[in-house]
Image (cartoon, rainbow over all chains, first blue to last red; front, side, top):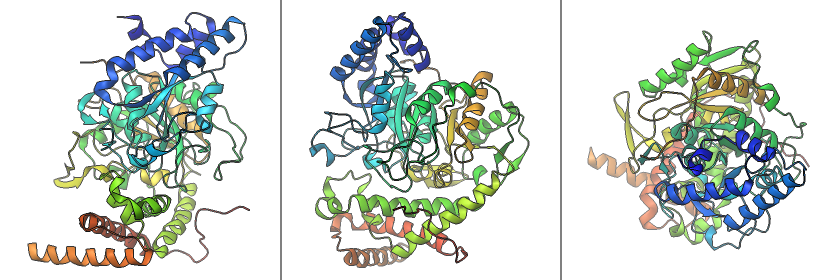
Length: 468
Length: 66
């Protein structure tokens, strides 16, 4: 095994520890990272931009700080990459589109990118995604599909597909995605990584291209729960420049997630969350349920209607953001998104507002549920990664459309901003599957504790996918 | 059966064109069938939401703070 391969298996925590102790130089980590990207990514297509110059300057700075005996930050020397809708200073923010490729380079980092850099991370590039985040498969017509490292003929999931694939392939240990309806959790599940969507408003969206502003979240993807917690700790906090940013105090999680699950009331979601999926998905859920000795079941009420309302809101808000381009240059949109954006522009106001009022009702019902449970388990996707280009799949004897159904189980949860970790269930064959660990608003610690317990038991794991 | 589907598709296309006219959004002929199909899906989803009886005191979820 080469030095580069050895480093690929380190998570962010281990990389930072080695750099902070002087055992590894950040510049060595960067060289190995760039070599891996050059070797493996042409087949995967997760990166759309590699920011070598910036990352090298950051690595040299970290090495100087370490040599001077000062604190280089909790992510010292950790290579990270971000979905290409996050502003990276001096880089054009593509947001998965051809239209935005005409824009001037960003003049400042997005808030989340700046947080990573302040913590000592090395920003090595921007990642493939569905155009303007409107998709669950990352089949991007402009730059090509992002391929699943477990099977290059299959989708990585979306819309943060590059963020899932780059972590799964060991190109970087930590990435950023955004999740409006499942766009962190779906690629995490399909690529076999951990993915974390914190409570709505926890992480600033300043400098990130919005998709559906009343639903958009930022979240990290990684190969260990500790990395998710470390990422969350570095990223969250109030930002007056993001109108939905929560003014709650910072609540660090990393020191609290290894205390096991004692005292947590855990239940499994029944009804809606057990239908419309492949048997292997329920088998993966059963593994998690058994490992945690969960016997309690809960019904999240009106989940199907919640998903319907999320679809109406997403289409309306998404179309609103792009209306002038939809009017003047529809042919420049990705054919995979164009017709849906155009249709979203036609939604009557009465439908949109009713969906937002239903959301308030549903939030109240879900909050009541969390008075008697702390954590709820549910599958992440209804089936595993499908072949690139496949449009329908058989479920329970009938054909369903692949892309929208990927969000079947994620949409009713992001709709009310709940914190959710998607954990990769160990031993899922032939392709990875995820289970959602869902908490009450602001209870990030609880979901990370359960995810960490599953990882410690070996029930959830995200080993680097080796090239075949 | 095929005729019925064709007729239904034409109705959906006309509905989409009427809604687009209200917004002032041109829909190109080559995009119309796809747009109409997605518009139909959104209307189906909206019907599910609209059919749910909500108490009058429920306000929309997003709250504006000056």
